[in-house]
Image (cartoon, rainbow, N blue to C red):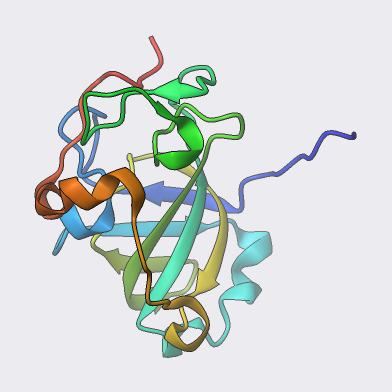
Length: 162
């Protein structure tokens, strides 16, 4: 199998300068503003994005430590398979967040509810469309018992690169 290579299309800027204490999902980052700067050669691709209230940001978890297939997630004390978590220590350290799009200003997106570390490399942007993206679910696995903790969950340093 050939390697898959991605290059950043921009940089994510946020008030989160350290991994410790960061919101671990956008629901725990309500009201927190950030900016996404797109590199000049990709700015034309932002056309028509301002009509969407929310976007997906796909990004490289550049501070994640090496891959672990069993992790203890932030909201649990039991080791879980990495693919049953959103832990950053993954075979391909990609992050995904749905954020509110406040404004498109030239090469910059002003976003809200940002749970991403400042300086994170941006891989892609996609519009959020409820007709495509919103599903009713039957279960959420081990998170069923953790749902009360989700809105305020903050990270610790167990997944940071040393």
